[in-house]
Image 1: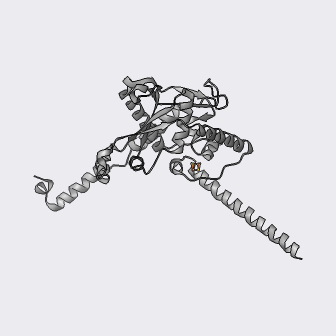
Image 2: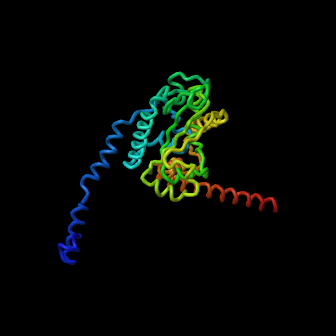
Length: 293
Ligand code: SF4
């Protein structure tokens, strides 16, 4: 028996309309929940022990400079994504606890001397150190857990994408600080509820794919330490001169909390560059004109 059998057709429509109103009230709890997410996270914010953090060193230099001069306002959705990432990290670390030699700890790394004494330049927390025997390695192996959306997961797993430079730079700080050579990156497909869709899209190759976990092996790269040094030097220089590096649009922009101010500044910078170029062209023309006379 269904609703149409109890009520007439019109009654059914009325009933459905009424139900619709009742199940979609003016949201009262949702705004409270959103504000609570922001409040909870703001209450847990800690100042970084050093100016440069491993997790940010591979990221946008402009963003670093905005953070130095402006208060970063993070919205509830960004906080929620971060919190969910933390929960997943903790869960995977618990699953792996029998294989972990050490769990997440804060590291300090001095790029100048290469030592790891506190209060030096870079700081960061790695996700764990795994027993090297698991990989037939003499040295232990670093663990890095990354959660990712289904489209990025798809790119990584089908080799259309690779480890981002941001991850590589961050990871090299940990490897150098720990004196290790190798990292096991575990990518977790956080959209696990869509694995059917994922399997369908990859049905020709699914036998060799794992729809939830993807492992990438990464080895220490000394050349990237030089790149980190260069980034730090550039950031310090811009900070002291009060200038900004040219905007380089990346995927980081889509979730950047400084996006609107960066967009506006970028427009002004473009206009200033255009004005400078046209003034230069005008000056060159005048010099040429005078030379002809
Ligand atoms: S919007 Fe993009 S370029 Fe601008 S600060 Fe953010 S990440 Fe950097």
